[in-house]
Image (spheres, rainbow, N blue to C red):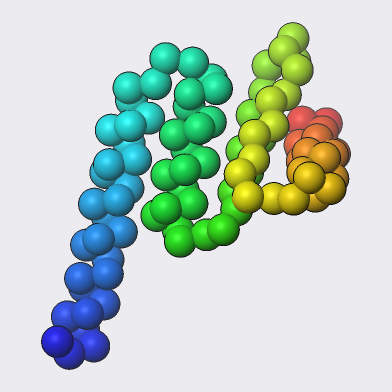
Length: 91
């Protein structure tokens, strides 16, 4: 298989992985289930060791932080960084 065909094959596999992830997301019933599906799916598709999801927007509700693969000490620091960053965005 030449380099162009190999690259096309890799892109096709990534696209199929994203399609599967979207199908899984559409079937979720809760925020916790959504986070679980997205964290595992993104980790799988991106071939990453860790992922995080920070959900914010409704000022009446507390933002939600989910993570996979970060150490016990790193997770609270990342959550704090996300909170500060998104606080600046929302003004």
